[in-house]
Length: 343
Image 1 (cartoon, rainbow, N blue to C red):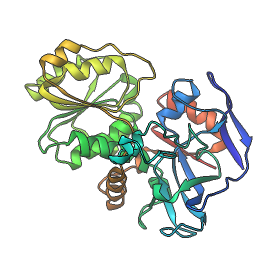
Image 2: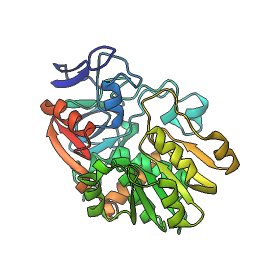
Image 3: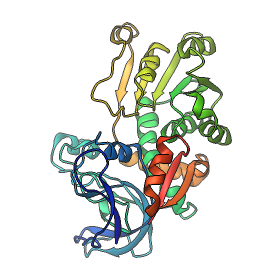
Image 4: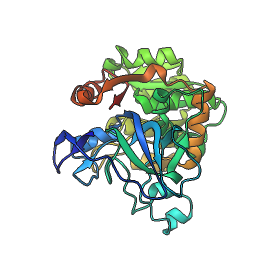
């Protein structure tokens, strides 16, 4: 099977290569990949800015169909449509695993960076990490389950949007627009998107189609903090930082009200970021640094998509796996929202 492989350490080193179909253990399922979503993490791996263990098939967001099951698998059968949590090789014994946080296990080696992932024809997955795709949800939409589950876990389970909250979202990418939709679903008051001038030509049009925000602030033309204060009076109740930009992180802290909440989801790609620490202290902010997704987050994500309350269709573009370089370039240029690679 043809696979997109990170062949060695360093900038670049992505290559389409022939790889054998993976063997499965008794408790595993062989999934024929329908779509694999390109994540910001994959772009960081390309640029040598995220942990990975080459040579490794990249990609961790997928939807597909069960091709074969191991002898101990009981919950799935051949032909089932599935998605899967990328929490492979969690030890099951450490304090994180025992407290239900397998996504943060220090021994975890997720598909796509720790072990072979989904940018290929087949991927092997433990039965315990799979979820069935609801019958009324397409495999294209289901391929968005992983980023949607992340936002559901961080925004709804942890940051807990309260009806009436004024929510500011830094960024206009897929995580940002998923967060904007979920904030609306949870009863937010004003949802304010903060982006850049180039976002207006494409990304903001997707946000318009989703009807997921009330106000857009072009941070290249307006003072973000002043505008947020003008719109809210005392500052935002909650800021979702989904851009990873240092300037946005600073603005996130400065536009929050006292006792406000900061939900940090965006990865920076840099080892350190400067922040107005004393201002955050004086505001007595609650700050949540987020990484990955919970089981319940996946359940919420699939239910919201299947119900039609959360719409991912306008965000999706499908390209061939063979065109992976064009897809990566397009995403980095901000000319696409979410690209699914089809094997």
